[in-house]
Each structure stands twice: as structure tokens, then as C-alpha cells.
Amino acid sequence: METKKMAIIATKGTLDWVYPPLILSSTAAALGYEVQVFCTFYGLSLLRKDLSGIKISPLGNPAMPMPMPMPVLVQALPGVQAMATAMMKKTMRDKGVASVEELRSLCLEADVKFIACQMTVDLFDYKRSDFIDGIDFGGATTFLGFAGEADISLYI
Image 1: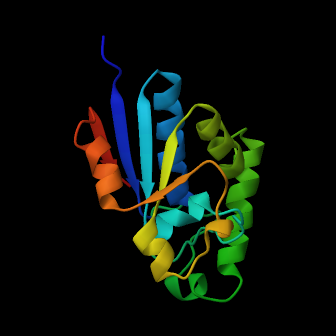
Image 2 (image 1 turned 60 degrees about the vertical axis):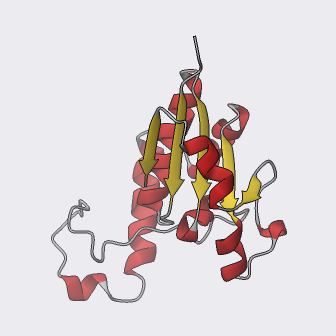
């Protein structure tokens, strides 16, 4: 029986958008899938050593549950993003949800292959040393060879 393959393109870098590729890829790997995640544009944030830039914003996110209704103008005020991020991280810890760091480590241990988009690395003037060990750097062709044969392809 041939191993199933899952290909994921990760393009977002906020807290609520880095979890789906990590959860889905770690789960698929645990189920025996071969998994590759191509991180491009803001999705590169989940491969960076410094994860402090990963935040959540209630602004423009009307589905985000807040303790009380908050007008859009208030959501745009300085400090609201930091407060929302701290609240979400605390809620996740209290509920036993793994951190981004924990999920990313789990993925690496499960042989999920992460590819940092070289074009985006160059575009944003990142250095390879900005990223964690154990990942690959490549362009779309690096990923498309795998994605073209994947049983499941996701764009997140």
C-alpha cells in the first residue's frame, strides 16, 4: 500500500493562522502520511526562531469571541492586539492546547518537511540564520513536485 501524502501551503502568520497547518500536519504525520508544508509570505513566521511576532488581532476578525462586545474603533487602539494575544495564549494554556513551539517540535520529530519559500526569504531580507534548524529552502518547483502527487492539498 502506498503512503498517503498531504501538501499544505501556509501563507498566514497570525496566531490563529499558524495553528491549522501545524495541527493538520502533525496529525497527518501521526496517521502515517508523508507531509510537506510550504511556508510563504507571512507563513514564514512559523519557521522563524523568534516567534514573538506571532500575535492575534481582534481587528477585522468578527468571529473572535471577546469577553464583551468591542467596537472596531476600540480594537484599533494601541495595546489591544497585545491584550488579545495574551488572553488567547492564556486561554490555550488553561485548556491544555499545545503551544506553537510544542506543535512545531512535534512536527519536526514526526518528519514533517517544512520548506521556506526562498523568494519570500529574499523579499523580506531574512537570513537563513533567522530560521529553525531542520527545514529546507526552495521555490515553488521544490514543493510542486510533491504537491502534484499529494492525496490532500490545502491552502491555509
